[in-house]
Length: 291
Image (tube, rainbow, N blue to C red; front, side):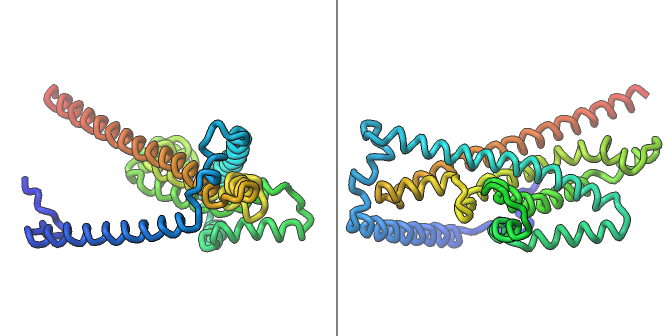
């Protein structure tokens, strides 16, 4: 079997040399920019030990208190993310199922709602909830304004993910459900939705990672999350760059772990689907042979 690529030609020796050359040039340019930035930081005293000691020196008198503040801030992020995830999944699934099963008028209302909130940046949704809802007499804690903004944006994204997952299920599955007397809603709940969950699970996990990252926007409404904690620590010790860097590392580490889990889960599900398909082929062949 030929392994020739379909969409592009295999690069020849000259193209490979050019690719290596331009890669080296790009790495050199990046290294030069990093060197310039490091030199500027050094000239401004950003590498002085007293700026880093409260964050990384366990012998510093405020080390434990600093990391306690980081932990409390990140717990606030996790709390907001957990509630927003549950609400976004519930509302998004409801919107997707309503769009699939409802009549034309209701379906157009759902489509309009989805398209409206898909076009609004999440930071605008959060700030809008924080500024407008109190004017309407809805006075809530900053946590709930953050959750409302995150849910309004992410629920419609999850609705599209669920709808795409339902559309990815082979049409024969729904036809078989109708053939045994199931209604449209029953076929969705019993036959289509469980299969769609397996298909869309990696995309859902990726969107949940986005929700966790977006909780960092809570600082714009003075919600006491990790970025806000880092800013306050930076003000106390006059090291905002170092404190925000620690917050960034925490977010990067957690989100990389979740992204890795999503990739692992996708591969695991793909291998499971391949094994099941192979088993079905073998079982069909045995049945034909036996016949």
